[in-house]
Image 1 (cartoon, rainbow, N blue to C red):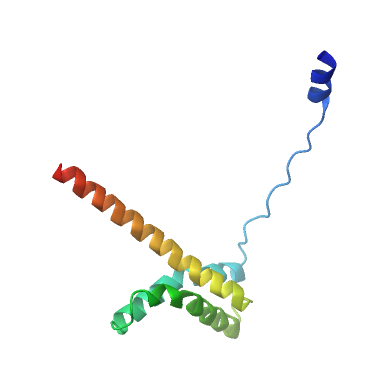
Image 2: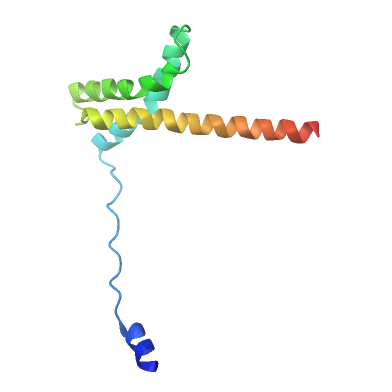
Length: 116
């Protein structure tokens, strides 16, 4: 039994490899700007065209991301594929919805606590 424990404890563990460093090049930061700008553009579309169904607005986010990616590529700020643009657009709206739902949940909990 002691030999088994000794064999287990004597093994050397290779330290895990570190993840890639954060992408902080200027082109990569412009890529992240798509995720920030997409919810703002979706809100702008909602404000300019109030007749657009609310269920359609989140579905527009990948297309807005692709359009922003193409615009950044044309200007030369970043080299973004259309798939990455779609992902970043959807990510932006996902993050906005996450914050919005958390705020609504907190508000409903405060209302319930205040009414009880």
